[in-house]
Image (cartoon, rainbow over all chains, first blue to last red):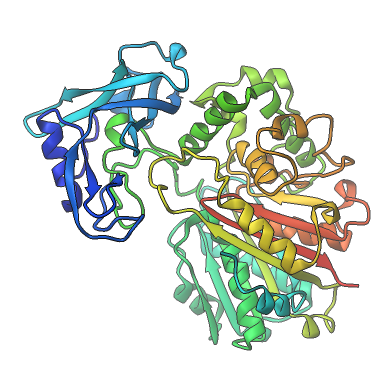
Length: 131
Length: 388
């Protein structure tokens, strides 16, 4: 079993939305800037007013790595696997796996869309796949 | 925004490193960080010609839970200034800067900085934890993706560099190969077998695009420095090595994802401050000591400190430029990649030895200024110079 997220109170809505297959991020109600990970205040304008807003779930591959060493036993069979940084069109950068494509075909700038992996009755985990 | 340069310039050359010491470095299954640190401190005191009773300031660090309080008890020291910072391995620069401020402000007269690292003996993995530490970093969702380890963060940056500038592993290999050559001239270093381009390229990936030799060692050891004010330093055994300039610039905005920038907006500010404070420029630097947890740190430090332009470090480091005998020798002791992983502390020791002319076969001729650079996200830098 892969290590599941520990849900901190601030980011509970992120996982609640993900369970419904929506990629939602905090959006500052004052200046409109999206942010991730969760924070009680906007790093741009310091406002503490925000809402969790669904994104379009589309983004661009910024950078990625491929693990050849297994640090978690649950990944032993997946070596080598990628971990990617995806900048969603709303602005924030998310950590994820890109699925549905060979690791050696990944290129910076490629367009990706979110897909959800239903892990158990609690968690659906956002991953990305070529658009 | 930089610090207050007017006030910082008053600190220029006012404090000095007067003693350096290190324990044996390597793998010691029964090691503990206190024993290693205290052995190093004894050697640093001997180097300075000082006794334990001369110390009234104490700074303690290590990657484990090395206690300032216990260290004081073991050493039998009742300090009037000091402490520990929970800043991880990058704390070396901040702690030395803290020591300088303590001395200059008169909080104490002579401070020992002691570092103990028993990572190998303790089986420290630097990756694979599953316990979330929200006070330190946002990481709860990372593990499901299989993301872990400091090396992965540097691997993302390496990929970004390769993709953005068309650089590649054959160029990056020059960093570990050169540092291995340096380590072979250092009797204290751990890795002394030659490293070739073939051996580098054929080594396994750990976190692609980083290969085995792009990674620092994990080993046991201790390091200690003794610092005092420059006026006191001039009465001691050896030529004082003055702290001419300091700089620091952290990067925390949008930082808890693995780095998706190359710190272009932040690291240059630390450079700006350190050169302005020290009153010297890049051309005055005779050797660089660069915090090298991973080889890519060298490239980012060179580019962001203005030794070359962004994207050019791959070319800049070729042709022997960063090797002993080149224009800008880097990590002349072998660094974390080949000497020992003492989280920047042996980089300070090497700076002192180079400036004293004690580096033997790896001596940089007539070294007058040596600079330490630690990359973001907690970028610090110091310029040391030998006393006239």
